[in-house]
Image (cartoon, rainbow, N blue to C red; front, side, top):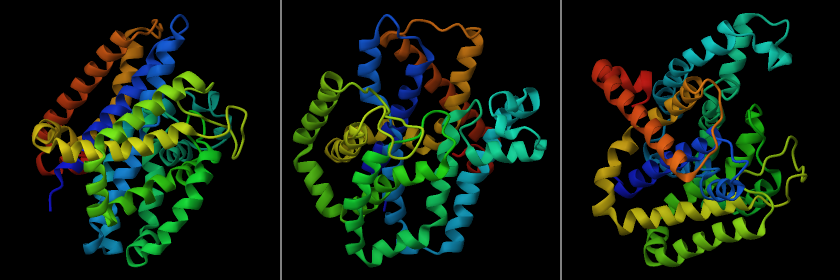
Length: 345
């Protein structure tokens, strides 16, 4: 059964992720307040993507067969990830010396270096691709997650893992520690699964209390902006290191936003599902590509960093989005049935 509100959720999630990455294309020395407000609102949109991944895994689990599941993920996620990575790998390994940035690669063969960049995902110029190696671990552990469908009482572990992630924090850019990232985002995946397994109750709650949830989210953003010293992602170089802060409030804020978006999609299905459906369908392609266009922006500007503003971020966001959509549309037209395996849509 088609879930239009989930498509709307998916489309908004990729828009949040792209917009969040556009912030850091600019300098904010003269306007840190604007930067902090944008970071608090838009950063760590990955929580939304992980939540929806867990939701859809549970939703499709009725027809679950581990082998066919992995084959499908290999064709529709891993293969396009590898294809889309080719320009980044060429630039980072073949055109430049990767050991200047990553001394741990010194003395290793070119093949090893290419594989290392693929496994880490986010080490090259298309840094958002760190998500794919991380989510691939969730694919591999699908039989464990399937146990939650048969034994819903296992969801109690969310009560242990979520506080753990709030103290664990995510690693800093570039995101090289895939295991750290997987552990950090695991609660969001399980919460998405749980929200789907109990979707009748959850949908009813999100629909009935949409406006209070929206108000609570707005209050959370305002409180973080006004009362916390850390804005945007709370990152640490090692597990349970609190040099930047103690509790990762942004994680909780984005979990709350997940339920706001569920309510939004349910309450305004007729008005938002149709315009957002094309973006949802090409969401993976937009995710795969937007890092390249942000890098191209830096090349065009000859690495000069301009002072940022909401207007500049908005213009860059719209430009990157338009280019990604255009590339996806042309790619689908040229590649036909093979487009999903090559560019992800």
